[in-house]
View (cartoon, rainbow, N blue to C red):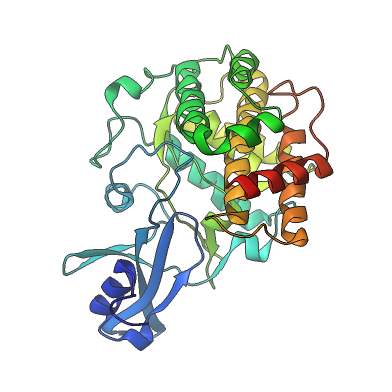
Length: 360
């Protein structure tokens, strides 16, 4: 790749590493373009440590609130408080994260499969440590305005801000391009009125730090079986039950493993801050309902953009079929939260996607 066509992230990686041939990437990732490399003279007895630098993808659509100015700032402020987070170093003007060598939890144990006990134990300990990080206890700069932050323990206010973000920044902001597709799939302004009715009346719970994106690809298992947690950029302070709901929704535990995870989570967070799991039996279904509803809007947009990221020919039949099946699944999952009388079947979704692609 020529210097003229190389991305800023790649140019920075080559400059810091000093060896273009040693740079690996870009790695797969939605939010960032990431490159991995060793630093000059960085060999160790047990192998060479590698570091990563990254830049946000240009024109990226963000579907989640971001509450900290910098993931690196956050990680630095969590040193000594959260185990299993990547080390940070400064290399010239670049702040680098250590690249954790290993396999993601998803590579080892795919969605819907049981997670082994030693890894579950480490997961629960992570929730224990997160519950101990209280609002106002970190030095990392926060970018969310005070007016956008719910009052301590106001779980309903916290969730309302998430619903509002989905409504305004995901749905309304993308209406000029996706209004026709949303309408055909049965999604409109009334969807959010319905959702608010479904999730109203949460119990108050003391706030703590949330990772907010704890899924199988954000855990890395190293050669010693140690669990590392990566990608902290969506972290925020808020209702601890929301972190559990997001985790359960994304992890897809087997039905016989999930209740044990919930019980151990309760013990872990209540042991740090009593009341952290208050009202969980009534509120966990509501928070899961929000996650299912949120996924409809985000997945419709993301999936459509994979088919037609820019003007061009309509994608092939196989790609359309895969996309239609994915959207059909999220619509069926959201039938309750959004009171969808009957989700469009896969053929109707495929027709809607094809029509949108032609317009796009």
